Amino acid sequence: MEELNRFRKFLKEGTWGYGSKDDMIKALQILDKINDMGGVKGSLALDKYGSMLYKVFGDDTFHDAIDNAKDNAIDDDRFRNSLGDAMARGREMMKFHDRVDEGVRELEVGDRVYFNPGKIAVGRDGVTEPGEYYTVTGKRRMFASDLHAYTIEDEDGKTVGEYDETQLVKA
Image (cartoon, rainbow, N blue to C red; front, side, top):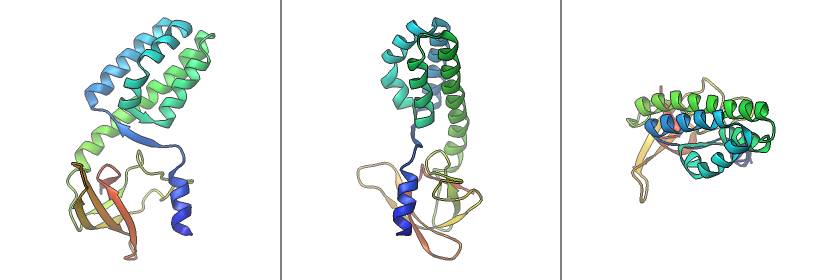
């Protein structure tokens, strides 16, 4: 039952993917230009770039702000405020992208790790709490993927589960 509750919490809003840093920079530049268009024209441009934004910023908070901007297209100020929220989230993701690139891809059995808060719900409503660390106890290449899957244990030696390298950060 505990595992089911953890899974339900995980399914709440979150982040499912990141584009490259270059793609993020380009997307933020496009959003800046869209912001200058105002609500009605900007909303049409957001529709045009929607697929690209989805791939580059795979994040519910980001896309909720984009949807709010489109919903407020008639009011330029509200459109710009919502688009500004999306851009701020995009910049946060870009900063986190650097940390993930540095620490995640070199995990080995025995490493101490914590959950990537951009991928796993961390905090009050999340699967884990900030400051909780785990130990990598197994590593395997995922089928038809360049990613590895890592088995982790908590500090009591209990197996927590298996996660890919984008979901874990080396402590």
